[in-house]
Length: 88
Image (cartoon, rainbow, N blue to C red):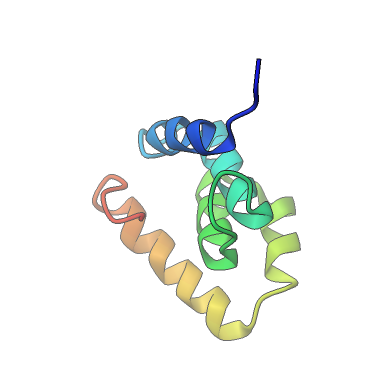
């Protein structure tokens, strides 16, 4: 069966927005690596933080500026508060 990262990302995002930690972790890794989603360190950090995957979050953070980390932390709070409605 062919691999379709974009299709996988779509489904993982849907699950991540339902507060499924494993899906949030996958979405974070997909953003970090650019598989199925455009590489975005801020969004990777956001989703990895929400998932509780501190190891991968810290790996991503090591490549980010302080400003990017602050922005990712702000986005994570904004995302989670209204039940994951503002995560995109």
